[in-house]
Image (cartoon, rainbow over all chains, first blue to last red; front, side, top):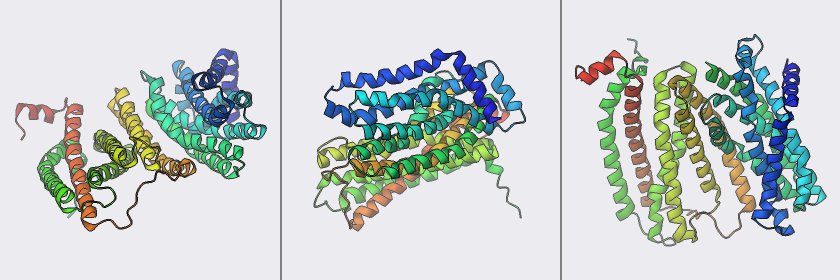
Length: 219
Length: 247
């Protein structure tokens, strides 16, 4: 069932490729603004790099949250999903994974290129990409709760940022400090362990909370 | 004899119970506030390191404690409302949020006032300040979510979920911020931890905390009463109340 949902959502996303590209370009543009706004000095860029890339990834992932449920909500599919005998949490998991594949994975793939713009050394580039690989699914999972709660509300887009961004902070902290640790030559395995722990905990709890939120929003 | 525990879970009977409780808690709050301020200003000695400026802790620390305490209380009642479908619990939860946010803001504000003479700066990215700021954001999120939803039932339940998600996340956020802080903080600035706080200082702070607690109860009861009136305005007892039949 999960596979079916993922395949369906991916197919829908592929039919509207521009949506996917918009998120990716938003990410690229935000990251490119900082050297213009702060300084093009390589020393400063190297210090900012992980933070800028991570914050931009947070914003890009958050902006695309509306798309997880709003399409299905508008055409009534979501209502049918709620009525179906399949566990809603399972459906939600599938939709969240699809959201991550569509918005998270392109960011991860793009991150090394942007890291080069910021003059990051090869090792740090690798750590940055891996930390995003572990962290972005957490963003999708936490964000799904916010997306479900604000479904169909006026001003839902701004509201979801207030709800979700404070909850993203731990991921941001450990994602960026993994990169920092690696560039100062310190051990960064622990950061990855904690990011992995966040991922596991959110996989367990988030679909369940999202399903409950959907039930409330669709009532 | 069986006690009817659920009697006051009905908004109508709680309305009158709250009305009877408010004067007592108001009196307690005023007495404790006066006592706390007296201890804070006249009994507690001047700190040998920080001079008189430290006296802001008598409002700062209670505000910070209350903001954290109220968030858990709010999440608790919101969760009870979600689990047992008791309307009153959800009303209490939404009544707590503004007071909690106010205390969080007060803690940040007084912290800045204390930081300026002590640290020479209004704001540092200290772990406690940062987590207090995030707590303030969580309150704002809860309130704006509830404000955006017109249907009170949906607002209650959606608020409950975000409060519960928040309460699970608060410790995670707190520890990651603390960890981040130890990583970045130079040795120049650190919270001054007096190893032995003078008894008068400590008791002043505790009395002020109790005062803030009593004040919160009063304000929350008043706000709950208003929410009850607003939501139950179509019921018979409220219209009787308006006509002065019920007292």
